[in-house]
Image 1 (cartoon, helix red, strand yellow):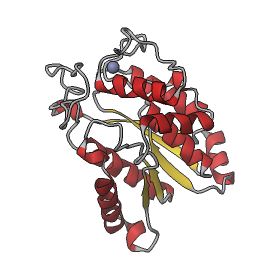
Image 2 (spheres, helix red, strand yellow; image 1 turned 45 degrees about the vertical axis):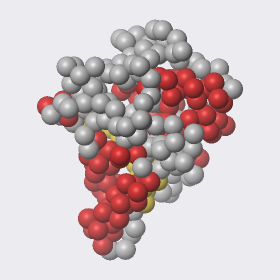
Image 3 (tube, helix red, strand yellow; image 1 turned 90 degrees about the horizontal axis):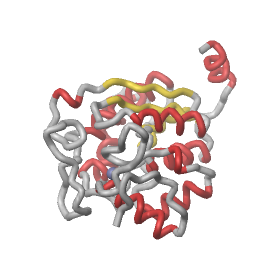
Image 4 (cartoon, helix red, strand yellow; image 1 turned 90 degrees about the vertical axis):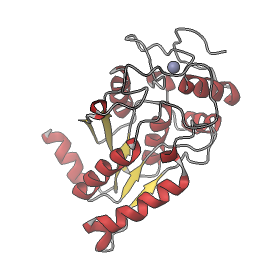
Length: 239
Ligand code: ZN
């Protein structure tokens, strides 16, 4: 910890908070933040998602991509349930991506997570928060859209001492307008090994992806479109 603190002290790079899930998108977002010259402070959440393996992936990604610090906070979203990811009574859909908001939507998740990132940013004196949302190859979640990100940024500047005193906070969503294939190509150009990431909503204890949830399907199609070998271990290959 002492070494970490002195590194912080010596670094003059601006600090950014990066929301890191352990999936492909947030890993790419972290690499983009680093490439933009930020010191990366990664924030992950144990929010009752179906598997801990995702958090193990987040730890690997943060280390591999040179995060300055990585915090994992508990969020009791399972107390409310209401999503296939936080309630075992609700099945993860496996029949293919369909129009509309699927039951893997976690109520208000990005608002809750961005709010905690905002609190940490103010404490660290950082003005930049990165989130790997995407509104092209995605599941229609309302809190992944550009209007939402812009509205949160407005709120962040109204709600904080930093914003009121003229140090404007920015919410970066660098993947917002990219296809999954474009995200993968960008990440590859930044040297990410996607084998360390896990996107599946219901990976098994060995980190193998189900191959049939929406997240697996979008990821698989992204690798195929990008013309890059998909390093994901699958329980059953997506068709
Ligand atoms: Zn899956």
